[in-house]
Length: 169
Image (cartoon, rainbow, N blue to C red; front, side):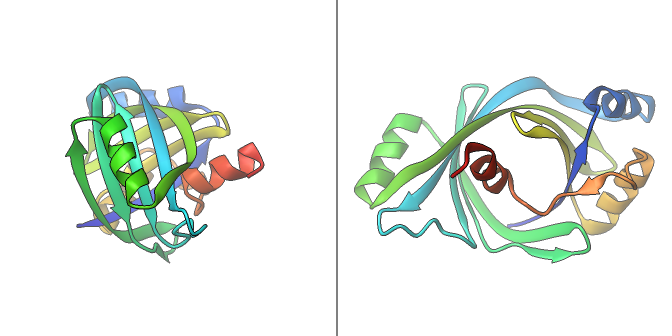
């Protein structure tokens, strides 16, 4: 699988949510808290160009591997594989036995919407408010325009990178 998305920093998520309603976007999930655990191997490699994450959200656990990101404009594309996991605790123990440990843990509140074939996520984290638009590149550009977000700041850092800066790691 490939993930294609853009991340934008915004001041007011409520304004964007109102625009989503106005243009007929479909809400996919009410606000949920997501806890992300980012792993590194015990040799100290944080998988700098890759990511290994265990996410817990709404009682579900998902293990995700993401490859090195490539950018075209503000749009990020990278390989991604993920699978559901029954028990977060068991998965953490399995990864520990394979030589991985939790290097970083942070949470966000996320609200999902669907518009023009894109998943639009409204995210609140301790270090800011963001919108992620995920879909094919042409649809991402279209949704950004529809939501009047052309002037919004494009963010190339990942949430784990921003969390590390925020936490002084």
